[in-house]
Length: 568
Image 1 (cartoon, rainbow, N blue to C red):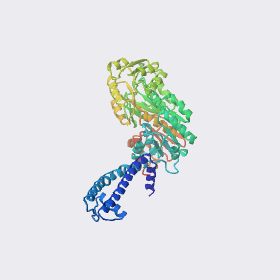
Image 2 (image 1 turned 60 degrees about the horizontal axis):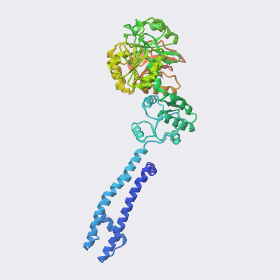
Image 3 (image 1 turned 180 degrees about the vertical axis):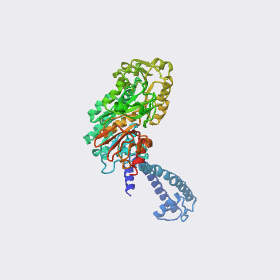
Image 4 (image 1 turned 90 degrees about the horizontal axis):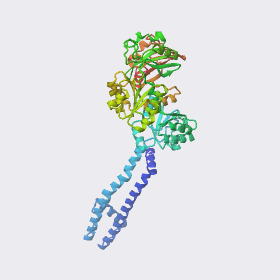
């Protein structure tokens, strides 16, 4: 009864109901008037035939004839009466058997079903909900972000102002709330005062309005906003956002950080405690064709090799892997140790030709600025004249045209370039260009952005060495803020996991655990009593109460949970 009452309450308050009810009531009024008229005429014709009946009998006869029941207990004897009966019968068929069901279904039953469908989407969070995260749009960043929240059992709710999208999200089992994003009632129903964080990820103009709405009712709740244009960062901060993330700018800078001049130099990509996680390309070094053990990096410099990038895939190490010119080592150590490695390879030849940047939009422009700041020459290819003009101050040369044009690519320096950075917003185009550039120059390092996660494997097969998406960068940034941690962007889908040692592994050695072989995760450190151990071996013991620090993707983490955590 409570459910039916709520449905009717929603239906009665709906604007469509007023319109539908007017039409339905008008039809019922016309039907009532027709029944009264027929009843009056029934009495008049019966009196002409010398028959007398009560008013109730008149209504009874009218309804039985109009509904085609036709009991036959009351009949006319004259032709006029029988003609009247035919008129009543035909109009009854039309009004009661055709129009009435149609009007009822169209103006009551269907709207009632629609209201039931609409009303199943929650308008408020469950009572006593606390430490939850509110998300203002289920975009690509939110999709990636919520995957991590699910894994960590952090409650979250997506607020949708579009009812159709809200229903779709609800049917997909996404925790969703329906409400206007500029309404205080929506956020009060979301229990915003007890929320852990709010992610405001609409367009820049709408973000400002939402931030002001939230700040008026929840002055202290942390707000993280996404900015598409760098110019709006200050506006959103002044409106009350605690963190404003220009993700596209960051994406360009992160991609630029992965560009190298094809000589060995460690490139920091993350940090854990006071230790740096860095990439070390070994192209043209003496490490090529050696095994991990033969490199002796740990013995000489004290750094630990915790993984190997092989064309976009982070492979765990056993020590017997043979390094190729395409291998990029993932090492961990302090700043001094990394500098000592750089000094070892300082005299190796350097490719000083310009990096080739394809696509000069917001991401490409940010990459060009970052490379220019680091003293790296850039040649840009873009088909838009306005884009080229904007990027020209940061580029060595600018080429207007399509990057798929062989002559243009050749003129832009594809054959000599140490790296190619693909920053178009079209995944298919980036995949095409990765394959094309790889065939033209087997030695070039290809760094690319991507939009859809399903295309990551494809672009790696096409020849890309490093890939990073807008969604990954944005979700990792928001997650880091929510956990009050430093942002680490290790690679597409690759994350840093801090996991308490499961009872099933406590006391076992790293070799006995089989973590790398069974899950693919790379154990980079063990933290016990605030002390971090990174010089690990197969004999390293995993103590009870310690934390295991690992590199890998979500699927690997899920495998770890399945094998070592779920049965606990």
